[in-house]
Length: 526
View 1 (cartoon, helix red, strand yellow):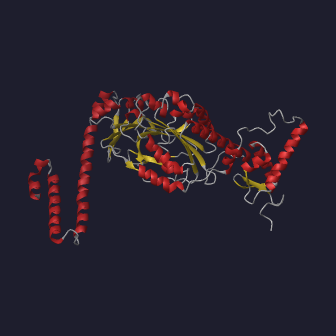
View 2 (tube, one colour; view 1 turned 120 degrees about the vertical axis):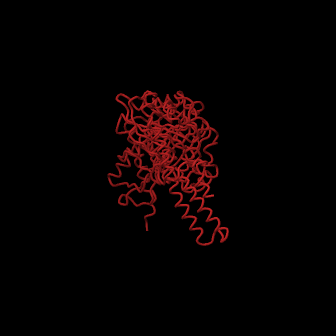
View 3 (cartoon, helix red, strand yellow; view 1 turned 90 degrees about the vertical axis):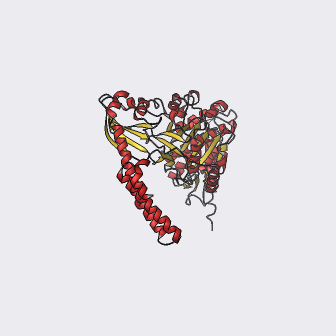
């Protein structure tokens, strides 16, 4: 057989002598090993080692030859670029370099004077036709340091043709960037969600639910994050993660109540930061970040319009207090996304396949489709485009896939690591909505100066008593609010004054008691 290949290999497309010689040697080595294995047994020494070594040695020439032929083919194709550039309307542009990789090849092109990257993006269909590629195979990206340079990439073998299994959580804290999937060059898609609102959009079946599962799989592994979920499809998407959700709403009424409570938590945290002279809330296991994940945000507008106002407030004011909104939708209409503050406050935009160009602009931002963010050309579930401060060039990625069994296993594994809401947030939730003093606006209360002074002194005395009677670990903000009858801002201001005077001490976040020199504290007596 080896001799036949050496002599007549040209008839099986082995036109070069070196190719026929390689085929003959490979056939002879394989035949010799099979003969020895038949006689001695395939596991007899040293046959396994010989097989491994032979495969390695014989594979190297094949790989090198294949790479060389691919490069020659690419060079011949690109040699025709002057004629191609004339045909597609980029006359004067020239090829500077070309690199062949596992999935195809990429070239750097210098544009002629007055030509822009946007001009080349508008001519992608013509470039595909001139290069003889399949539709959707050409990518064009700007070169950051040169306005008249671009990188043209041709994908001959789609690296995202098949689903990619989720490798497991990529984070252990909300401060770490979350790995959503992989780009076409095999590099991971990592983006930070700390103090960043996010919008996820795409038509039904495009992969939006997969992105939600990837986010939940990572967020549930963080001990410094609490997740509240809203799923108006009666929980079809989020209920499998119920063990990792601190709270979940599946009806319009529940969604409105959840977002209203999230605003109250936001106000409570903001008051605490103002009292302490701090600017941001640092997430920790005892003071976790709060992420509100809304599946099918557009449904809120129809079924719970009051909730949109609360969502707007969170989008505008939530960053400093580590309260984050992640909204996913299948209907990125102008009515749903364009008339509120939510969309404008989204730092992270993830677009799966959309039907129309204008939908890409609604999700990713005005003018993004013209700039090359062609979400309408994504051709498989799970493929997406990511726009974020650190991702300002259109690059296609594909999300990881979590099947039902993986979701169930992850939810069970991470359920016992979920933190509790901090004392400050709990106090804000349990405080009456009205933030005014007890006597404000009540016609039955005395209104004179002496009456106000008496009420203020009574509140001071009640606060002092509550601090003196506090246990060693301190009294929570909610208990102090109930005992003193003050509004939350007034209580925070008074506690700061008492701390400055050395009469009160903050034992831990949200828990206070009187100092040892002020009065004996419960639990300290001998």
